[in-house]
Image 1 (cartoon, rainbow, N blue to C red):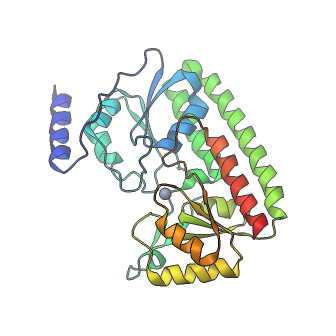
Image 2 (image 1 turned 45 degrees about the horizontal axis):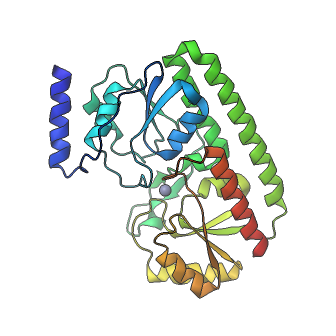
Length: 306
Ligand SMILES: [Zn+2]
C-alpha cells in the first residue's frame, strides 16, 4: 500500500511538473521471460543481443524520440515497477533515471549502468559552452565504440545471469557470439581505415567521438555532444573552412527530416548529405551490429571521396 501511495504521489508530481502525457498503457511483462526495462534504443539492442528470446524488453524512450533532454511518462514507471532489471547507459545521459527508480519503489529491481568499466571519453565543457569553468564531462555515446559496446554487453550479461541463473549459459553463449562478431567487425574496418586517403568525417551532433577514437579518425560536427543549441555563425564558418581544407565530400545527418543546417554546410562546401545512425532513436529492423557496420561502411566510403 505504501508503495502504491509513493507511485501515486510521484506520478502526480511528474504530471504537475509538465511531464509528457500518457499515450498508451504498459502491457504486463510476458510470462516466463525475464522482465527488463531499458532507457533507449541502443540499450534495447544490446539487451536483445544478450537476452534473445529469454527476456521481455520494455523501452522507456520510444522509437523516433532521442534521449538527450527526454522526460519519462507515467506508463514508464509502471514498467519499472514490474521489472527485474533496468538498463541505462549512464555517463549523465539518463538524468531522470534515479527519480524514476525511486518512484517505482521496486525492491526486486536491479539497475545496470552499462557503461561501468568502459573507457570513457571526456569533453572540455569550456569548448562546448563558452563561459563554463574548465571542467570535463563524460561523453555519453559509449555504445558507439565497438570496444566499449563489449563492456556494456558484459555488464548486461552479468545482470541477466544473476537475475535468471537458469539461463546463465544461454546469456553467456550469446555474449560470446556478440564479442566474436564485434571483434571481427572491428578488425575488418581497422584494416580498411588504415588505407583510407582521408581521416576526417562530419556529423550532425558530436556523437561519434568514440568511433573516431577507436579507428584513429577525426570527427567534426555541426552541434555539440549533448545535441544542445544551434551552431553559432562563427562555428559554421570555421566548420566550412575545416571541411574545405580536409576535402570533405559528405555531411552526415542523423535525422533526414530536418537537415537544414547540414544543408547549408553542404551547399557552402559542395558536399552531399548522407544519413548516419547514432542508435539513439532507431527502428525495429536493425541490430546493434548491422547499424554499426552500416555506419562504418558509410564513413569509409565518404573518406574514399575526399
Ligand atoms: Zn547523442
